[in-house]
Length: 156
Picture 1 (cartoon, rainbow, N blue to C red):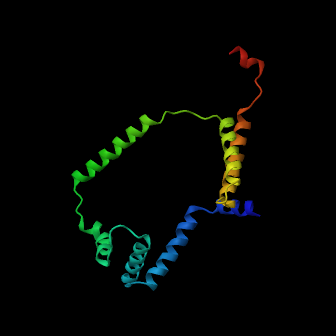
Picture 2: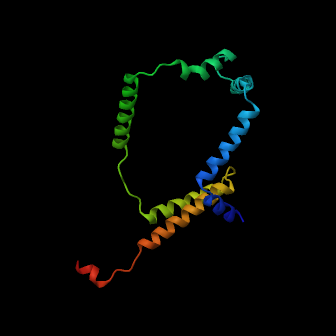
Picture 3: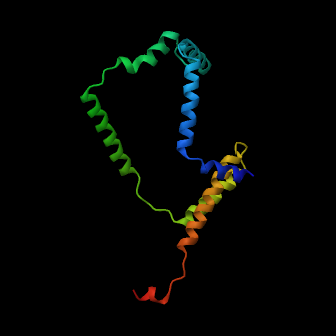
């Protein structure tokens, strides 16, 4: 049953989800239009629950919400930000060698992960279902790569 639900969910197109959220958001905007204090109050309550080291008041939250509107973005700032991003991408490429993991090794790792997660209290059926789906994918890819060689393959 759970597998059928997961398969059905996978078949839902992203456009359907986007359209549904647009309808929901438009409905909420018309219902709560003009009542911005309610959102600020919720953020203030959340900040209090987080028990941050510095005290946060309603004015701080309003400043954070309106910060983007007040900041002027110049061409220089955009270029600097883009250069920082490019530098980060180059650094991350140097740190990670492109080692390709075989389908067999990947399958073994996924099976180990499934065994480990099944032993944990925090494991949910959704997590296990996702891992089992990946196990199936890895097994199929491994099976597709395992082919019996013909004698002609040895004379190439």
